[in-house]
Length: 418
Image (tube, rainbow, N blue to C red; front, side, top):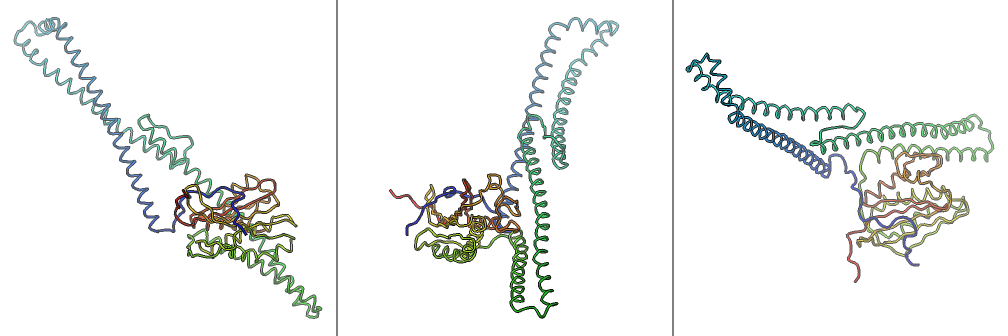
């Protein structure tokens, strides 16, 4: 049997988004230090830019003032000295001694006026600098108090204004996401409460019949006991979902990679679904090589393939074919990737639901979840595990054919053959 290449879905990704590490891990502390360093650098750059702006504007105003003052003084000495001198002589009562005193005060008065002008300009520069900081504080308060409208600052603070507006938009998006997550969790509680109550009611009802009717025929008692056991299994599955919520929502996923045969691995997963598939008239098919060595966490990847295959078996049309393909393919940069694709024919998934199908707690009547009545965690957990490996999972659906493709990196890039 030959290896089949990818028949649907995107090509292997060459780079994956960084995944959040465990709380308090070295990578988180490194990221935190990097973020703090970036913020410190940005604050230092902002202070330097403001100081430079204030300094340049103050120096320019001082230069303009000095030039204007010198020009006015020159005009005065050139054209108005005689007139002002006569006026001062007359003001002194034509007393030469008094006139000499007034003349002696002229230059000190000129210097005093010049110094006063310089001080006023410097004071205005200082006031302008504090005004900038006041604007920054008001803008930060606007962001923290969640006031409507964008942050508007002077042109010299355009970069800071853009940063604050970006922070404000990010905060608004985070709040909307948190609100949506909280709403989905509330809906989850309602769904699971209803789902748990249904099998629990059946269990109590059938056990009550068995308890109150000891003379029931053996066949009837056996049938009631079998139904009760099935409902108990269903109740156990629902309770397990609560543990899944805690496990995959509050902690990172530890991996223990090892080499194993992916072909044998996929066949074993398929075998688990033969009874369910047979009951729905589905044909389960494996396409891939006889042997395929890969490096991954087999236990975690079993959960991924199990969830995806469970989804396909649940939503495939009866009497159709569900195909699981696997191979190792290189990406554009030569990195080898383990590919697992599950394809089924059945209910088509709309583009809107494809955008959200891997989100935690996502449920909709016309969207696929890991199982009917589930919490909407199966595919979300599959993505978490794939990304913990450095890979990802993608979904595509068109003309009734839906496929889920998992990519897991297998090592560094290898040089292409010449």
